[in-house]
View 1 (cartoon, protein in one colour):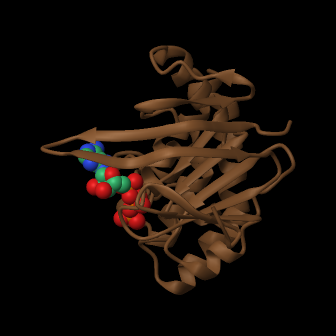
View 2: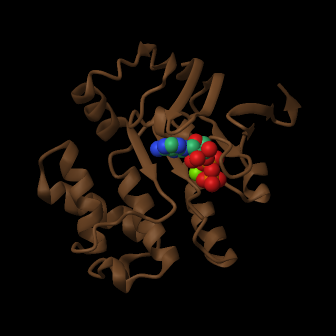
View 3: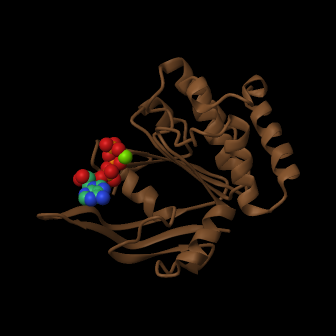
Length: 228
Ligand SMILES: Nc1ncnc2c1ncn2[C@@H]1O[C@H](COP(=O)(O)OP(=O)(O)OP(=O)(O)O)[C@@H](O)[C@H]1O
Ligand SMILES: [Mg+2]
């Protein structure tokens, strides 16, 4: 499907003492089978954009369509179900549940979609093993390295085979060696029925995407180097 995700004249303002324009009149399309990178200085709007696509935050102006469906940000239940079935989210600081093991962190996400503990457990073990973590299944987050934690977080994000993967600076907390391992893990998730969008400050990683979106002050500065 062309334009699997479309942002139409999307703006996001935050009301503090002054009005902060985090995003201004953004038009963007995302197609299945492609990996997109978001790059730009701190404060340029990368996370804000990802939060809108993840249906966590709502645009101030404009609309977003996903799978040809205009998102109604008032229908939280519908959006929550869509997110748990179709969107995998990866954060810079892993966001793992501290009281649960690596295996449990992943299998709980699997349980949220279909209530079958045995299947969730089996799938979680499979994915974690494919990420080289078969010896870390019973470790708690405090017993994992940063790189391992992020691979658990990626396993959790993909356990339900999401069509959309959103990653906000997934390698931001890692040293270069682990950043490369985690980034490679993310790139391998590309397939023709999926969109991957990641924000990064690493230009080398951004260059490896199919489409590089450069942001500045809440605007799109360039797409694949072409000024907008
Ligand atoms: N909840 C909020 N309340 C008020 N202002 C916010 C909020 N979230 C973001 N902003 C502001 O919106 C702008 C865009 O922020 P955003 O977090 O999207 O930037 P970013 O490109 O992700 O930056 P970084 O590279 O540092 O993560 C910034 O000026 C920020 O201060
Ligand atoms: Mg950010």
